[in-house]
Every structure is written in C-alpha cells, then in structure tokens.
Image (cartoon, rainbow, N blue to C red; front, top):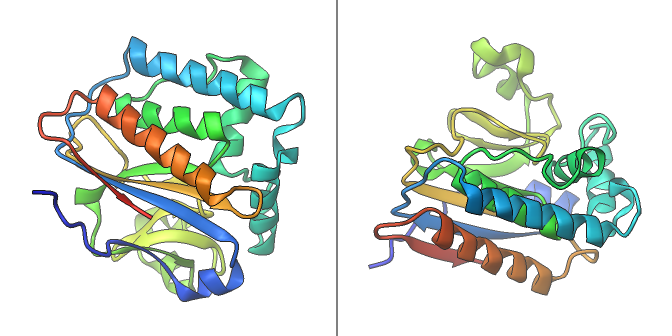
Length: 234
C-alpha cells in the first residue's frame, strides 16, 4: 500500500499572493536505500550538465528565462541575486566555469536531483522526510526565526527572507539558495521528498511535469530500492 505523506509540504498564502507565478512539483519517495555516488549517478550529472549548457545556447546563466525570473524573485525579497544565485543557477555556473564534470557527486539521491536540475535549469531540492518536525512551509522569515537556534544565529534568516521551515527552524534559506544540514539526504535516508520549482510563464506546467517524471525515473534507477514507492503530488 502506498503511504500517505499528508500535507507535510506547504506554501503559505503570503508567498502565493506575493509570487502568483510560482509553481512546484512534489515527489515523495518511501523505502529508499541510498548509496554513495557511482559511475551511473556521475554519468547523469555529466549528461545534465551538457543538456544545461545546450539550453543556455551561449547566453549567461542569469539571462536564461528560467533563471532570470528567479533573479527577479530574489530581488523582490531583498536578496542580491549576483551574491545569492538560486540553486539551479549556482549549479550551471559551475559547469560554465569548470566544464561538464564540474559538479561533484554527493550520493545517488543528491546526484539524481542535481542532474535533473542541470538538465532543465530548474531549482530542485531533496530532503529527509523523517527529519522534518511537523510540516515544512514556504514562508517569509520573521524575527522569531533569528532566535530559534542560538547555535546558528549568525547564519539565521533575515526577517522578510523567503525560507522553507518546519517546527524546529529553517531547512532551506533564501528560497532555494542553500539547504540546511539537519534534513539533508544521506546514505541513511529511508524516506525523502523532492521539490521542483519554477516561475511561469518561463516554465510551463508541462516542463515541470517532465522534470518530475525524469527525477522519479532516476530515483528508481539509482538507489536500488527494496520496496520503493514514489508518490507524485502536483
């Protein structure tokens, strides 16, 4: 029987009102047996890098329509996009500077979503579902978020910053700029969720669906699951 993840991942009404063109696709994967990067997952990173370079067609990463709209969104909540590029722009920048093998392997799950992110030039993140405390919500940070964890206060979100956060604090800063260590995917991860993000009209619903299907295929093909179940939530 497929597990029901419930409404664990949500977008706040404030974010939807401020960024009405924001869209996402959500995948839940249960029963994972993750493993270290291997030749297959590193090959997919290279394939994704080459596809991303082809999609750029010689333009700078920030000029591509998919990424330009993220720059505009970052600017809207006060994050300088040249200093804090979205995750997809950061990945393809490494490829532009260092070549098709510039993005290192982390583990099979991370390699899977990074490769699809590169290929489609879309921000994609994956995290350990079992390490979430309550729901994870995309929302604006408040002054309370600065005070939640004194150990990382110097690295705490600024009020007004867009963050993903659960009951314990932020899991990803500046929307999709950097994930936190608490919920990262590791070789001990057994249940995970993956978020594919885009801004219309640069990204169509069809493109988001294609990226989600490709990611689901790579998760199934790379993690050698025992009883893997993938739930695709539109």
